[in-house]
Image (cartoon, rainbow, N blue to C red):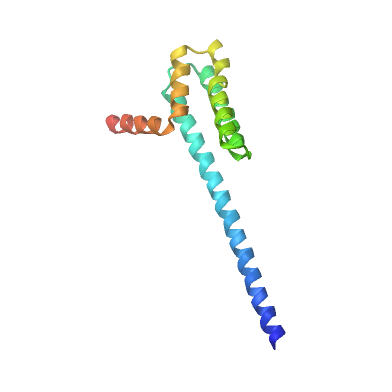
Length: 133
């Protein structure tokens, strides 16, 4: 009887643990999908607000995608905080230097400002949308 009780107790804990693990994995997947959607929306809004031609917009989209991918890799790596901050600062300084050949400095500075303060860029877009209505 005792063995049966312990077996049932163990089985219930095991099934509960696997259920919570599955729900955690599902939640992580949903968060990743939400992050991707937010990233794409941010990039699209930023690029559409720039006054550049279609070729430049496509190059800027690619650079922004690679920037956010690199930033995510840095955050996921197990660096100490001071090294992580150093790598992020280096990424901010160097990632958009190639755009200087095809874009004006004001466009690059607008991109860098939006990347450093994405919430500010979102607020500006919301104000513009409200003013249009």
